[in-house]
Length: 298
DNA sequence: CGTCCAGGTCTAC
DNA sequence: GGTAGACCTGGACGC
Image 1 (cartoon, rainbow, N blue to C red):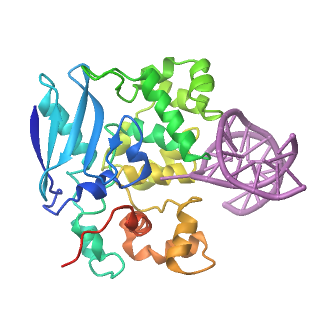
Image 2 (cartoon, chains in turn cyan, blue, yellow):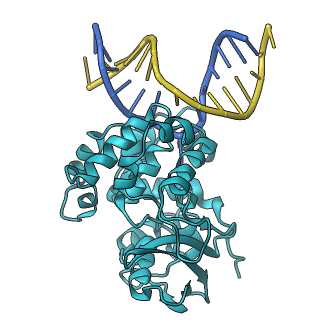
Image 3 (cartoon, rainbow, N blue to C red):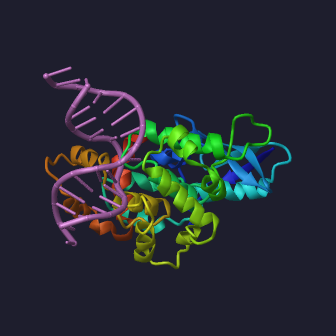
């Protein structure tokens, strides 16, 4: 079964599928599988009480087609894919500012949509799994969460969803220590999962646009395992771009690109202050411009 | 072998 | 409020 997805932003602005699928590292963690050139995404999503393998493939300049198994809840899955691609966001205010910046004018062709997970919970857990470890360790931890605790997709052996909070809450030390090898993060992850499963904690509420950024940041920082880096990263995936993600990759990468030998965090923040609520997005895009090959200019 | 550190965070000063 | 030291893990290094 095939469903067409119109690639237009909330304000009718263009959407670059490859730039979206390759927008950040967490986007390519399981259950997502992203084609190397960003032309396709495969993932496993819950729908009507089951799990489904979903494939999204570029189809023309401003569209994509969603391929799903016959009998799958097409409307529900398409809604989830649009949410992941952040098609409801209106990036025109950001593009208006970027257009005036020679360094960033290129983004107005459809960059700037950070692929998000179906749930805030998933983005939060994945972000915690990126802290203080190598990328190989992040992939191992998230891979174990999906392979061991996710819901199997109908008719797609070996493919599973990202686990529910309840499934993560019920997993024992043997899983977190022995299989995921999450180390000291294990108790953090299980505590957050248990609080969400028991409804003591509502992380999905952080997506509510009515909440001020400061309030969201405060709630995130209160979670175990979430410090300044994880907070800024999660907020970027929440579409709150005011903070810069400053870590051991972004700092040296910015230093290299800017050509300045010594740059402080405050200095970087100052350089992007004119982007105000989009400062973090502008910073991230500048650092990741070469993640996608640019189309030949005519 | 030990030491360092990777897209940090927590606790205790 | 700012800073040191510990922390799971595993791969890259130096000795």
